[in-house]
Length: 232
Ligand SMILES: C[S@@+](CC[C@H](N)C(=O)[O-])C[C@H]1O[C@@H](n2cnc3c(N)ncnc32)[C@H](O)[C@@H]1O
Image 1 (cartoon, rainbow, N blue to C red):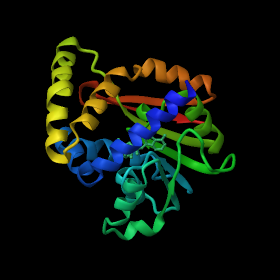
Image 2: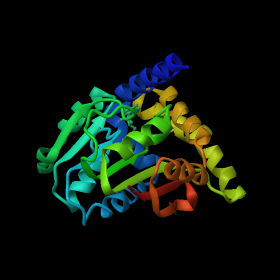
Image 3: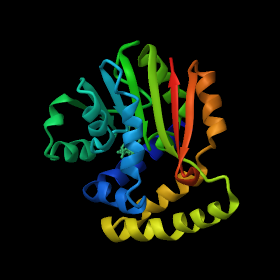
Image 4: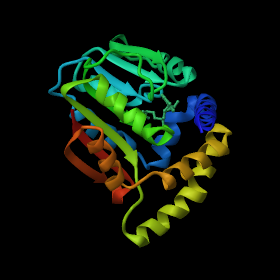
């Protein structure tokens, strides 16, 4: 079991390493330019917080930059893919100086207890094979009262919209991703992982079992994305 999880992680890492240069572009096109608005919403929750912040599964700092636009604080960006972190460093932004990149595993955080006042993870939780362990780690590194903000895909509840969404996931996403990055398999994985990810009710249970208090759950764009705001 443990081996399977480690294999899953290296598969995911290899996939993200390969698609890095077109990662932001595919996101924008695949979401019909909604992804920026979803991340802006996440970032708005950091406006009134003091640092330091932790952005997990940061990729090329796509969300990290949105958070820093609102609030300039020390922000640790952690990702399993070194290529993602290095690519992020090539982006021309004065905000880079606030970002402390770390290559690491979101299930085993290299930080002491009670360090961060805000922790974000956008489109990352789905990739973690041991979600219980990951959420316990989020809890451990957050300060008391600290904010956990998760942005993740979800399936629409309306069955007509869900029907269209399944077609979009099965055909459009692998086609678009394959065309732009040359790695159709990475985008097939994306589609499958979205369908396998538990519904918001289950994620809520997981979070409260690990000690978090719910502040808000909000869904966007017909329910294809869900935002979870919880507090330690
Ligand atoms: C879909 S991207 C999300 C990037 C960014 N948060 C955003 O909003 O666009 C998922 C990221 O999670 C990273 N990742 C996957 N498994 C991970 C793990 N176990 N620990 C840390 N990062 C991981 C991948 O390398 C990838 O960069």
